[in-house]
Length: 432
Ligand SMILES: Cc1cc2nc3c(=O)[nH]c(=O)nc-3n(C[C@H](O)[C@H](O)[C@H](O)COP(=O)(O)OP(=O)(O)OC[C@H]3O[C@@H](n4cnc5c(N)ncnc54)[C@H](O)[C@@H]3O)c2cc1C
Picture 1 (cartoon, rainbow, N blue to C red):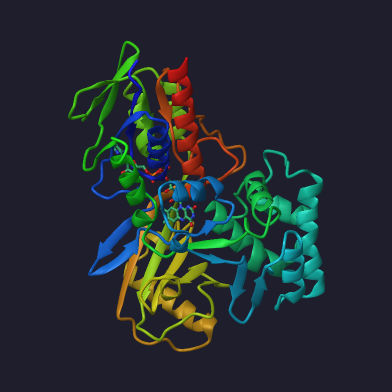
Picture 2: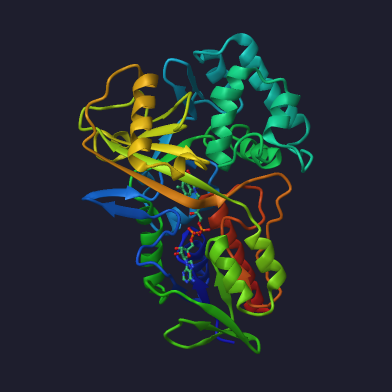
């Protein structure tokens, strides 16, 4: 059998899969509905500004993702590396020290401003609690249950755990899976100083990986069709035809690497995967809004990324300190169920007022502003969620994406790992 595969979707999962297959000598063809590569992590060009569809934060623990960046020739300098820092102006400053784990955190806590000793020990007590349980928690536990079980004081809940949980899982603490949160803490804070680093892209999210991945594919005879949606998949013996494939080819291997709400109908179109399609369609989705504010050169936040103690935004990134234009801020509102539906001018005004309040200073007049709401940014990472695996009931038809069963919430690393996992299974099936 000719070693060839079709991938539907050029987001991070689809491109990770394509790169790995191409590396292993498989002939790859990628079909992407949009003209822009990257899916939910892509560049957006508006009024002369180059933005992302949403500000992203990566972590040092994203080991497979950073390995792929190296493979596709991306310079490590395209990521701003910062020590784990929670900086909430006038309320909290906690920064991990440049030392091996776990001393990096202990020293960071000892030097922290805004926490009393009881709060510092309480934070360590929660981490000890997880470690004693080998990071295994009952499947039904929420993050709030965990915080209560570990008697976390209100200040730690409000300024540390809630913002970290919402940033990592895009799910509020009272609904978020404690197990997945524990997995994130295990592989970041509790792993090594490098793993807990915060990585902020210095280029747009299409340029960071999708474009180098496309270049990598081009040098290995891979093909990538953009503006080319696949409407349905029809099994034909042991092969598959794709409605929308200009070559009308019968593919031995097909990967559905779309977001869950697009994967479910594609799976259902095969007529043989109704159960998995229903499982995927049932995954709850959460929105994220990013409010971009251009305040002019000279406006600088106290750190490249700061937390905010009150709503609507939870985190603000200073793009000027991460390779972007001076004075361009990106305020992130995770789980923006109500705020995302708000009038954009009102939301911009609310975020500006919040910033002025928390920074305790007047900001210059906004030169330009834009709200981008991603209504189905990620799945809601609730306890006991039933996530599908890579394989489908049809041999040769695979799933890749951030929603595939794994230790992680919906993140770039989860997407990349699912894509790589798929590629390995395909290569193994060619070998049989
Ligand atoms: C606003 C926002 C902020 C986020 N912040 C972070 C963060 O800080 N850190 C982090 O790690 N993660 C973050 N995420 C999550 C991260 O972006 C996603 O987990 C990841 O991009 C998902 O990649 P994917 O490849 O699984 O899916 P997608 O990115 O959705 O890719 C699927 C691709 O398939 C294409 N497609 C769909 N249907 C078809 C079809 N029928 N035919 C052909 N192509 C099709 C789509 O156009 C898309 O390009 C954020 C997401 C959003 C939206």
